Amino acid sequence: GVIPHLINATPLPERLRARADFTVPGLRRWGLDFHNARWRLTVSRHVRQQLRELRARQPIDAVVVNTQSVALDLAGVAADLPLFVCLDATFAQLARSRWFAPNVPSRIFLPLTSAPIRRRERVIFQAARRLLPWSRAVEHSLREDYGIRPELIARLPPSIALPPRRRKTRPANARPQLLFVGGDFQRKGGPLLLECFRRHFAGRCELHVVTESKVEAEDGVFVHRDVKAHSDAWRQRWEQADVFVFPSTLETFGIVLLEALAFEVPVVSAEVGAAREILAEGKAGWLLHHLTTDTLAACLNDVFDVPEAATSRASRGRLLIETEYDLMLNARRLADFLHAGRRRAEK
Image (tube, rainbow, N blue to C red; front, side, top):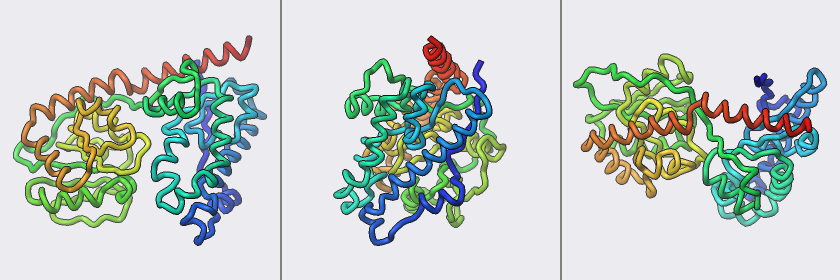
């Protein structure tokens, strides 16, 4: 009973891109070029304009936005349309991380440089029919940092279509495979994993890197580019992996962890984003609070040395996907929210 119409927030048209991306190099280091705020406000205005054009062509009953960053200019829309805001992090959470302030100078001026979007964020939270945080940490921030009433919050995490249970297709005597998946090799922690592999696992394992970054293959290291999600090449990487390693240091959620759990691949992850929640406090994978090449190596050895524990945690992960992150299950939940919002708007 839901007919979706997609509005893409990005890429921006050329005339808006120049405004959003404009920067002053000397001020950028301090955050004083207001790039964070300007980019988000420009994107949100682009969304508002597209929504106006869509409504001029046909009636719309509700709006679902994926992150508040693209909704900052939609408070007026919420006056006559039920607005549902999905979010992977609040701006309060991002302000406590390196997302908004990657260095000390930018942190000093953060209250000033983030003020334009922090004010609008509060307005849009108050105007929304319901807030749909991806994780319990975001839900907690909405209550504690913003004073949002619990009945206006419903956790709705990213979800995936359940793949068939994987089948191992490699010869039994093949070397174990470590798998890394991340478009940005640097930000996702790839260099640390590569160093760990060179120091501790070269000759014992293979490292398969799925990325779009410039990474050179070497002995035991295989680089896969242009691998599209749900393609045969993508599925092959998951079906052949013995361990998925997620050494990222800057995340708000970690959707790739869901893919690993869905394929029942043992997971070793930095304690970043929503990893602790996704991996059930470590019951569905291994969590590393202090991430170094040595701690990562010790954890990987633990996975290889106790295969029964790895299998048990991977099975627990698959069950979590089936009960918490299944696409069909959560699509139905979202549909229920939308129908309820429409009925309320018609009263």
